[in-house]
Figure: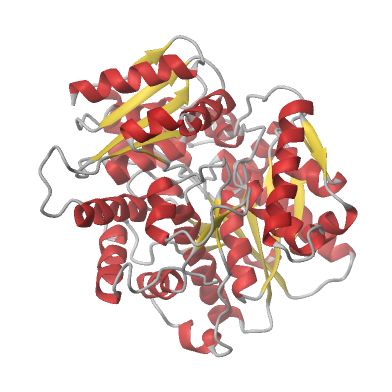
Length: 507
């Protein structure tokens, strides 16, 4: 077994899958997610060797450990990385900014890509990766023989535009993004619907994000449709996204350690909805990056916080509409990957097969009863790596105000969930007299994407102006652009499939 091959979280039959197959297929045929057969371990001297590398150089080193050179050569991988991050507005790609140094709090800014959201870090790479694999597969083939990919994804806000900007104009790829009508911000909708490339399609679905995500899973589960249209995944279930996001944990760690010294205990606070962002941190930690703790910051849709505190994974009612809509998710798809590791180590005695069967059983329970409970050993293991907090809308507003009042820095509401969570942990550290702990809170989106929440918090400040202080010129221009959308009047997989077929015939 190797870190260059992949297997499903659900069963023993889908094993030793290549990186290319895992990326292009997206979801395993049994409904599980692909995980590396082995998590690679870093060389003992990596802290010295890697500390001065650029973001791009680090990305190459991390990705190389998960991708066989026979699949992508060193030269090609370096070129893919270079191309993917050439679109970012900051030289450091993901810079670390001090937000409250006295308290030991720093922000990792992940919004310098083309759509002003953290998902660009992964999806610029994924778009280039899809094109790379398809170009190679289609070399010398006629148009009729060519492999094509129909990428279908669901978004609660930022994934959609990041996927579209990553895939627009790519050869032999069509992209369909489902989003819940009226449940994303106007700028997020404009970012998606104003991309008029022929291969880009936005589907506005009457329902919730969870409805959209369920439809995507149903489409992946339809083997005939899949076979005919070569459906691929771009949302955070795709392993390539988790892989690309690992880089900024390493880069942020090195940026801070160079500033503060090696004895600093570094914790990452991550606003979490679908669990992909923080899962990348888990892999970095398992590889050997000395992360002290990973802290899950949830909004009022708090399934992850409730799980960590109780060991029960339960839907717990309907999804709540909050000030941080990209986190308004009941079922966190990527959490299945962590559950597989917890099952293997704490339920299945190291057996991959038993771990897959256990996860399969847990998700069958989730489907039939709305929840499941993991054994005490599994939840105890999770608590060694993770802590969590639940932040409500009032505290989001409070955090945006607090930071602006202190430094004029404007947080988006999702980032505010992480900052509030960090401050709560900083207070706990003080009470327990824990010293030299530093917090890197992930800033997942530019505040301009969430005007309502930001203005609600900051309109009371003299001199504050959203247009002047927050909104970049590029986003100002979106409102005047033409929009292209397909409206789906009911959250129904058959209606969505019919729309996909109809749109493909028009391309």
